[in-house]
Image (cartoon, rainbow, N blue to C red; front, side, top):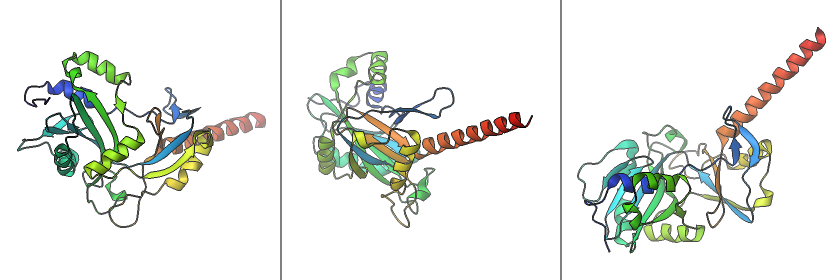
Length: 271
């Protein structure tokens, strides 16, 4: 069974295939945006991958061979389009991948397959200097399958399903196999560790992350800094992100607050 690209509701398709926000590894304090001493709990093996500092792109593969490319929020082009939205260089980077993946029949019977790809290194992106001279590149970081019957749902139901964590993502093994089939590299796998060995405190976690600060996907020149590390269970049942800026900001705020308390205490003692 194929899906006629011209006959479907693109608003629904866009909502069905958006990528959800990954929770921070330590919970965010709603009062000030800092990190709390409440880490994500993992049981068993945890895979750490580089959080490449770019922009999210989507390749949506429909049963029958049609495809679309989107940013995190919007659809940018589709198979057969002559003119596309050039936003952030996503289409230019991913068009060949979409065309190649579509020939594999990756959007199977009754199933919409979505490849989530980090596009980075382009001069259109803020962190491009961390990766080289401005040459755009990309890495696959997740894959989800969506039943095509969900296109018949109301848009509000789709949004509720997605926001409630309804999407089903591929396990590490399936993800690696699909990447090989599509000729796309995964975001770098940095380590495998027992969940019990991940530091529990904010300060210790920041120290743990330091070894992974330099990017391993620079396209030219000396490697710059990446955004952080994504931690995930092999079956993708648990996932969290640890960004350097979150830890640095939190520890800086704590240090500043500690100095203020000490100054206030000394002032009180002097008086």
